[in-house]
Image (cartoon, rainbow, N blue to C red):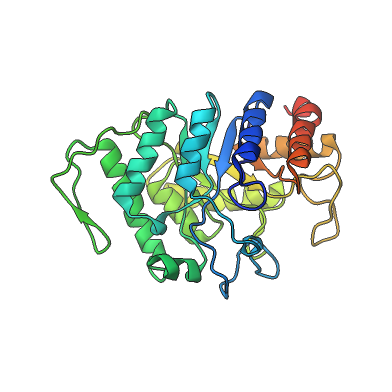
Length: 316
C-alpha cells in the first residue's frame, strides 16, 4: 500500500522553507505520494456549504492564503525524484482545458512520469463566480474537459466540439510521458462521482469525512466500493481497471471518537491504525493519504515521522 501526505498550499506554512522541509522529509521517510490541493481564490463571504464538515464551514476561509495548485505541483516535482505527484483534487472547471492539459503534461514529462490527476467538480459557487467559471454546469463541464485531456494526451490530430470547448487543427506536444496518459482519479463520494469513475477514469479517490456520505470505516468503504463495481460493470468495464484510493483526514496517535462514540478510524495506537490500513488493503485500496498536518512545521514533521516509525512496520 502506498501512503501519501499533503504539501501545504494554504495557511501559515505556505512559504518555501516549510514546503521544502515537508517535501524533502516526506520523500526521505518513504512516503510514496505527495498531494497538492486546489483553490485559486478564497472569497471573503462564503454561503456555499463545505461538504466535509458537520457545520458546513470552510476552514480555509480564515486568512485566505492559497497557492496555485499546478504551479506548486511543478515546484514539488523539481524537488523530488520518486514520489508520485497527486492533484488532490484539481477543480476541473476552474481552468481552460487546453492550458490545464498542457500544464499537467509538462509536469508529467519533467517529473519522469510521476503525475496522478485527481479530478473534482468543486463546491464553492462564490469562487466559480469570482473567476468566471460555470458553477451550475460544473459536472457536465468536468466530464467534457476530462474527455479533452484524454484526446490531446493520446491523439496525433486532436479535435473537439462541444458546448464548452471547440478546437481543431492543433499540435499538442509534448504529450505526457506516461502512456496512454497519467492516471485520472475521481474524487467525491456521490453516485455521480462514481459514474464518472466508471465512464471516464482510472481510479476512485473519495474523502472519508463527508458527513452526508461517510466513508469512515472499512465496512462503509466496502459498501461504497461494491456500488462502484456495479457502475463500472454497467459501463462495460472491469473492476480490475480501477484503482482504489482513499483520503483519510483523521490520522492521530491520540484516540478520537466518531459520531457513534467509538474509536475514530485511523486514530489511536499504532497497532489500531495499522489494523485499519490493513483492512483497507484487504478491500483493495492501494493508496491512502493520511493527515499529518500540525499547527507548526515541527509538529507536522513529528507526525510524519511517528507514522513511519510506529505504524508502517506493523502494516501487512
